[in-house]
Image 1 (cartoon, rainbow, N blue to C red):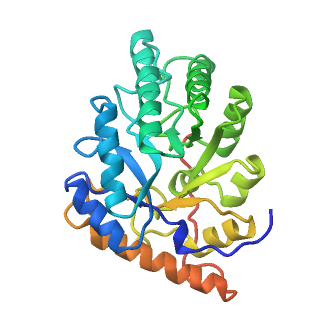
Image 2: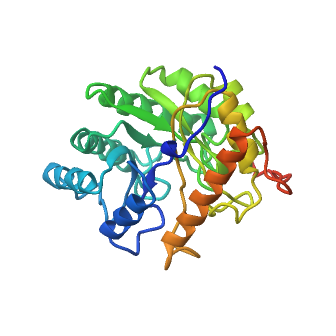
Length: 301
């Protein structure tokens, strides 16, 4: 891969942080920010995956189009029960797999490029390899089903508090090798990356040509904060992606359950403006954010 110039056209719109607002409000804001692609977080009231039928998905696709956007990725909520593809409960695990297969059909109607996946988690008091095998087999089943519909899937490493399976780039590399599916790539989440003590270079080394999407978000290093409210080095992250020739999309994955719940637009505005400044600095040869560094931090792994 060779160096490229990153641009704001690579930033998606998203309803992350808008769960206490209408989807129309979110889309209006994202359109004002110039977003043309959208990562849809599959939660109620915006997109309740379990209850959504194909007609509702068609209506949602038309709504996105009316604001000048298209669906890039469908991201079902999956970091909490009852959705867990690695669950030791056979019935719960099967319902989770079926949940994602249903999401495949919704993706097809929405015209999305990606279905977003994580590894789930095993019980903390069982051997990790037992849970790993359940996760691997579920991912293989879901990605094979997705491939029938021409849909690609993304696997995101999580923080240790969210999973005990895929939490590092090496874990993702091993999982992709074992699943062995050409339509499965990785989403690099900058917070999960930093929480594991890793860097963009770590990911690029472990997963050459397999980083298909990025969650570009600030943190301390945890939390999903607006730029520049955390202490991650946005300039260095963007410089590494540019050096690698990254041309994929990036989502600013803020959460609205806390500080951004009442005014998500302001948080996104700060983030987009900060990212735009850093991209402009990068284009002129400056790299890194002065005074910012990735802290020495490790979650248990």
